[in-house]
Length: 551
RNA sequence: GGACCCGUAGCCUAGCAUGGAUAAGGCGGCAGCCUCCUAAGCUGCAGAUCGCGGGUUCAAAUCCCGCCGGGUCCGCCA
Image 1 (cartoon, rainbow, N blue to C red):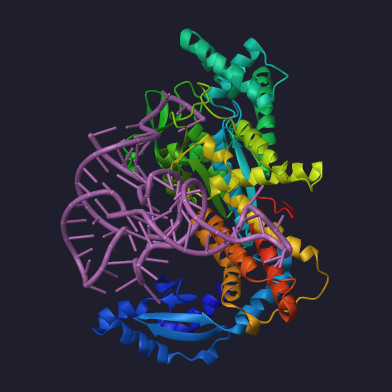
Image 2 (cartoon, chains in turn cyan, blue):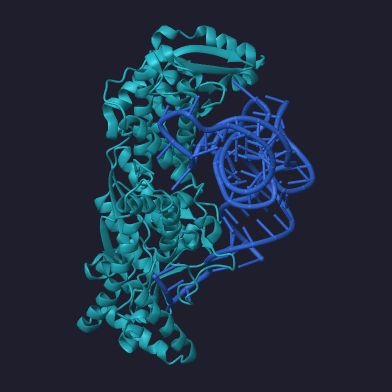
């Protein structure tokens, strides 16, 4: 609804309706600062210009603007009662579809997580998963045709090391498979450090895998699948699911890698250097060249990734990759090479690292906190709090603790803008009695609790709205607008913040306004509670957090 | 050496794209609020030279330049 209002205001303003001057404000629903800009050109005072603009506007042309006024050069727009009534009516009518809109029906591919299958996901990887999964949910809400990929790096050196360790030591079958794999991976790395001769075995294994040796392929498949099995289980606990797992070796086997090299040759972008094939990056503004084929004839990660992006171009309209900040250089190089080949480059969301107080994490050295450990500990803490309640069954308590702990985790990661570095702190992760996600879930449960007690028609009336009710409804109307802002800037934290505001405003309403004992206002307020319930539930769902009805 | 990102109250963050109305939340601290729909809640108080220094502008947390602090990258690794 707010999107509609913005469109109306832009139309009403006509020549003055430039979007970049239009903003939300604490003083009015919308305001424009265009008078400041025009005042300069016209050599007049901003408030005079604003006055002139206001008096030229005809309110009868629009349906949702109730009042326009100019204050100190700002032009403020306020909504009318019809806007409030239509908003509440639309929310209740659309229910679980409220907030959905059709910005575009393009096919979007979102690639995220894509951690090397050499061990369990750690707390840095899940920042990737949570950003990626939340973006995917938001693009769907905006009407896009979304598919998510986990790109499996099955051809890397680290996988060869894991495979070597796997065949040498075997694995502990009593452990979760990804944890069992990382054990032999770490052990093998230590062996290699002490005995450089083993490097040759790693190289041989990589070579044979790329050449397609049946035996080696089945070894790699076994190891990678074991790791993925564990990774999928972890992701599932976090409500993250990928549509497809795409193995990079596919692009070697299906000819895309050969094609990409041919294309590069045709465009004259490639040359030989000491037996290897390299892309001349100086023309694209980079210091160093990029090798796409080694002297021994094997390809590199970037070669397969280029092939993957040619494939993406053939199958999707838009592609978004969520990558750690350490991939910035190679990511930008990839974008530029793909562009130079005449294809559409991926959009990339770079997120900064999650570090431990003692420094950065390393899977190879076994220096990391696994996502599983974090999930278990947070669940345990949540369970302790829920167990204090005596009015809930065992199943209800489990369900609540699960929902609250996953919510706390997801919200903690999603609320921070991707470009901000994070330092992980156990105390903060586990102290979630006042976690924002729980606060939002609690607000939802409160709304449900009221609605459980009634069985009657709701009848919203804009005339009866208090100040808080009015503010609350305007906030509810912004749902799809905030989704749009979030996906355009690829920053899901914007929506996370919005939902917190809704919960906070709902709690204001809740404490100030009795609902069940509101007399003639009862059905009016019930409609507001119902609308809030819907917005909170749909919003939590968008963040991948379960909206529980009791807590 | 070169490049990129971050730096906002004791702590965590929003705002920066598109400069504009008293810099907004949360945590923690202090003081209050349950004969009434879930107190995982609400109210109030205290707490900020928006890293530092210049510049542009009627107006800078926001744009430009320089510096400082933290992180990252610059492999025939991924």
